[in-house]
Image 1 (cartoon, one colour):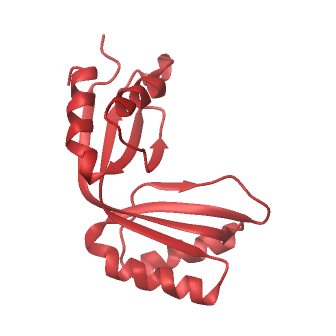
Image 2 (cartoon, one colour):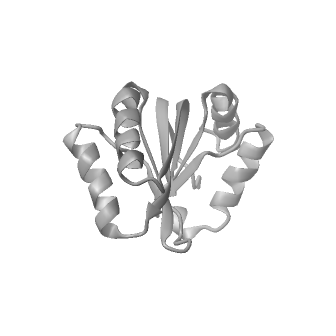
Image 3 (cartoon, helix red, strand yellow):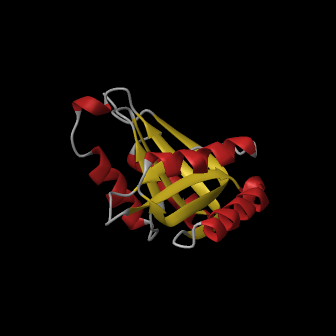
Length: 154
């Protein structure tokens, strides 16, 4: 029985990382409320563990939202000088799905081994009990897609 049964690909993804964000749910709520007010659809979200009184918050959105996201990031860093925004585009989200993933170990290790073989860096990772989503640079995406399809016979 195959553990990974599906690979979905989302192209033209922007990655936004806000470093040195005050570590309060109130502040993070303000960020995502502003994204909502601007009508920006957010996909992957990741927060680093607490470092002192700060965290880093990363999220993805479509590259077509770059202008609005950059304006919002600049607004946030102007109002809160500790916040350091980083934005990149032309990334690709690769999502591997398998309903029986919770019953197996080593899934993440296999995905990372496969991506290592492509010579790519993973820009962002999110997971659920039945999927692993990784964000990679568009420059390496086709090689990564082919390798994952080959590895998992998709």
